[in-house]
Image (spheres, rainbow, N blue to C red):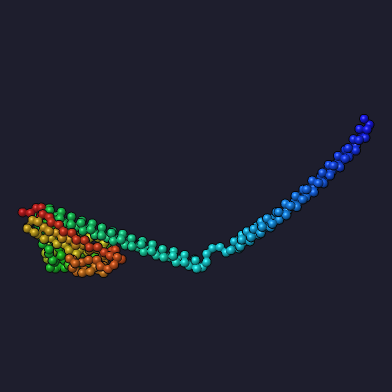
Length: 279
């Protein structure tokens, strides 16, 4: 028993030595392994470092690169944008002219239709229709249809509604409708309420039938067979410079380009109507 106890410390020491020896071997092995790994990884680490350095330098160059546009690029962009604006402006202007042309034509046609309806309606209810009369004392043209008198200037003149009404010959009026008092025969209109020449009558409740900037080019009421009347009306819209053949109601037409014709229109209407209260 005692021998075994004496042997035990010796065995323990030997075992410890063996363990320590094993640890040294393991440490050497670990060091060798690490050295091998280091040898293998060194080139790869060098490549990775080079890549990182290159990437960092590229990012640095990118960060340092100037932003925005050059002056030439800005000039080109500005020129293109200006060209687009000019094209758009030309398109809008053309559309505006077409719009105003349509409004002008529509207004002229409406007024011409209203005048035609008024004249034909009075013929249908009139006991007599006069021929075209020209004043002896005053420079007027006029018709009498029953008790209604239609008066207009011998020379067509543009109506300007911004100016005061002037029913004197050549004054500021287009086509004036007034009512003859009672059973008075067709009498020449007088521009004033007093001091009228013999055989004339002053305007009685006159009403302008044309619109602004319009002129009556023709009002022709002709008997076909004593009962049937042919009515022809021509009304023009626009200034004198907007027309060709201004003094010829059968040839008058708008002239010039699209810009000039935006505020120019000529409407012609013709119809036949029977006198209503003929004998």
